[in-house]
Amino acid sequence: MKLIFLGPPGAGKGTQALGVSSSLNIPHISTGDMFRSAIKNETPTGLEAKRYMDAGQLVPDSVVIAMVKERLAMDDCANGYLLDGFPRTVEQAEALKDISEPDAVVNIDVPDELLMDRLTGRRVCPKCAGTFHISKLNDPTICPVCGDTLIHRDDDKPETIANRLSVYHAQTAPLIGYYTDNGKIRTIPGDKKPEEVQKAILSALE
Ligand code: AP5
Image 1 (cartoon, rainbow, N blue to C red):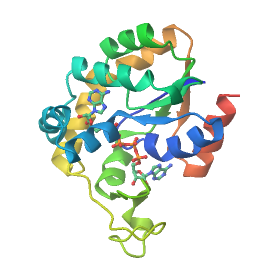
Image 2 (cartoon, rainbow, N blue to C red):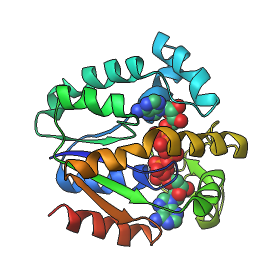
Image 3 (cartoon, rainbow, N blue to C red):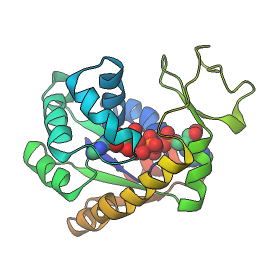
């Protein structure tokens, strides 16, 4: 299955993508993770992306589209993929249609007022890719799964989150209408417990 996860920053796309991609046996492709890895490795793409990400802005379409095109050409995408964080503009959606037409779009819907707390409290594990909220951790610095040191993402500061939310509403939310028009979207309430959200996504995809 060729699947897209759509939703605002903090909706739970990454949290849900881990279980859903493994249930459907398709690779989880997060453009945000690809950029963070490029930044860590100081590649030209990473150096360009960093200034946009630090400001809470979108990386230019041409850069993201080229990166995704290369990734989707890899062997592990032959039977499908789960794209998390792409497309984020109508131009990216149009480009994807030409590269590889998606089968379904899951829109994870969470009210803005919940997102700021989710993101300021998020901690991520660089080793096992786990995503946690400080309210659920005994020690907010240690990964409860693998014991590595947890990271507070640079773009999870309140002022950057506010920019990311307004960029989402201006540039990404129009994709809900775009995919509604072609009948591919399933909107799932994302303000329930993570396991309930997962169940709802899998049942919507049956
Ligand atoms: P990216 O990494 O894609 O960030 P994002 O879309 O802003 O999404 P997040 O990772 O912040 O949130 P999420 O929905 O995955 O939530 P999560 O599961 O972590 O992009 C970062 C940047 O890269 C962009 O700003 C942009 O600059 C650039 N970029 C990336 N793709 C691009 C593109 N296509 N075009 C241009 N630029 C691009 O959960 C969040 C928190 O909530 C966690 O603490 C989690 O534990 C908690 N949580 C999750 N689910 C629940 C639940 N059901 N109940 C309670 N808490 C929950």
